Length: 275
Length: 107
Image (cartoon, rainbow over all chains, first blue to last red; front, side, top):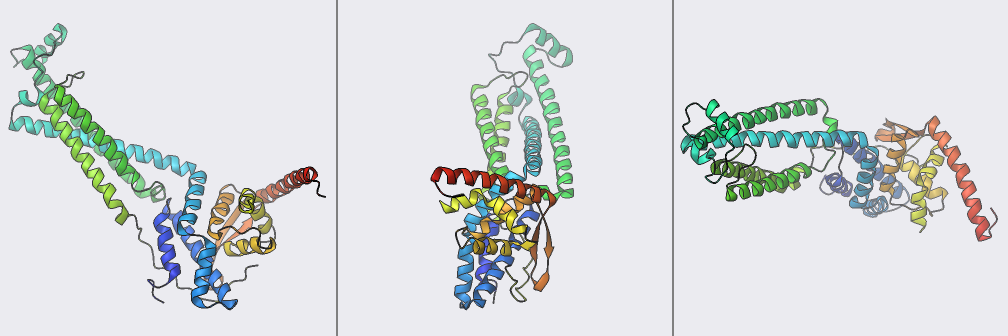
């Protein structure tokens, strides 16, 4: 019997596509389900049913894939709080790392745009911004090439934002490296959450950030020590691109959701006693 | 209603069936249906999460078995499971006695 025409194989494929959890847990559920279904079919055949009716009755008694997956997933959440919390921490850390990397890329992009246009275009202090005397004195002290407070503030923003946000990006790369290393050593912690979750959260966060940064661009805002029309618009564009990448991954999840699985062992041997 | 009541007491029923000896999932579920005369008729696949939960709670233990060329997970009651079964049976008898008293049935 070919894999495509075997109703048990089709059922298991359907069930697998609906199960969440650690790969070892999913494999166990599938193996137990297959053994159960094969035993039930053997039992039905022994009771005199025709093969097609035997399969159909066994699958019907077992419950629909959606019904079984819902019960398994519900129990999985309840019993796997420890792995669930670890997976949640890993998810948050991974999202944070990606966010930090995007921040670093934004800083690099702003610097690049400044090189192509001018530092004032990207990091220029808004003309209406009030400059405290203390800040002015500090900027002129640390930016000796500037002749005015506004120039000094622009150069200071260019220097500080590039350095600090670039540092955030480097830390993000290091954090992501550590997370990937830990996950490669403990693959059981992967797959606890639906694969759509991380990119969906990423799309929401980056999308919100893009809108917020767009608003800062529109108002040419000064937020703490950050300003500059080019800076806000560059970071907004980077956040928008990151949101698009995440949204693209969300759309690709259905195809990627099907996990690779070893070919199942063909049914063999007599039915085992139910007693 | 019977299905809901079965679901609510499934842990106790599974522990009782496995107190008779180790068995794989299909055998446990078949015994559940057979010994209840078909009253306890849940979608069979939804019973496995209960077995997994009881195992995670330490009331059951399990191992793979490949007898007959088919790989099955065989469950057995642990000492903790035996204690839990004993407690659960006592509580159930007291509860059922109370219900029967109210309904005017003999316990």
